[in-house]
Length: 115
Length: 114
Image (tube, rainbow over all chains, first blue to last red; front, top):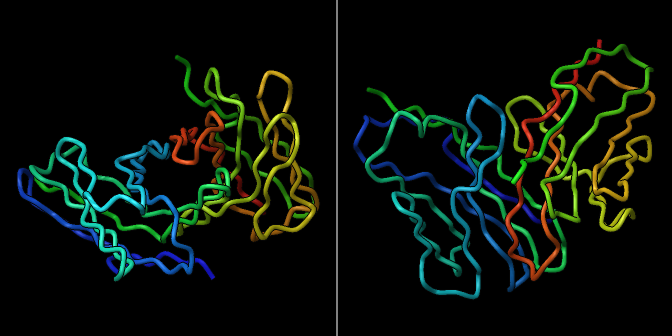
């Protein structure tokens, strides 16, 4: 079974500091894509960052970066210089190239950025 | 560029009733999918439509059905509502491509079944 685990239900961080959200997943496939999505109170899921499993280089998007460890099936998200607007639910997800929009999501981590 | 829009934003139904949720895809997107997000959980894939045909389905019973129209808008229909159907229903769209295309989500319809 394909599963995603996020072991931190809730986290908090002071504004301007750095926080890392954990994610592990389980799949027997070798080729897939990994994502972090953010869901603010508006409920709209917003793509934060994505990573192709065949790429060894970790993806970065401005203040957001990932630590992708394929052998360990780990995909953590680091947020640098945290801002109040980063307060949201964060979901880790993956999908396979031929599975269309069939994403497998984790249960989420609620992140609070404190002033 | 318009985003993904869903209607209604909130809905209250009683057990046994039927419901239709609507979604307008982002301009230029030909693939739409629906997700169910129960309280405190991540979204779960219901199904996907591409060129007006179901093109992938998650572990949901047949009473969950859908349609995609020529303009790529979509409907999710749920028959014989059960209490456990209470959830946020998210619609997402993308342009079918090489596998790593971005998925754009709407803000969802919050369905409460009493």
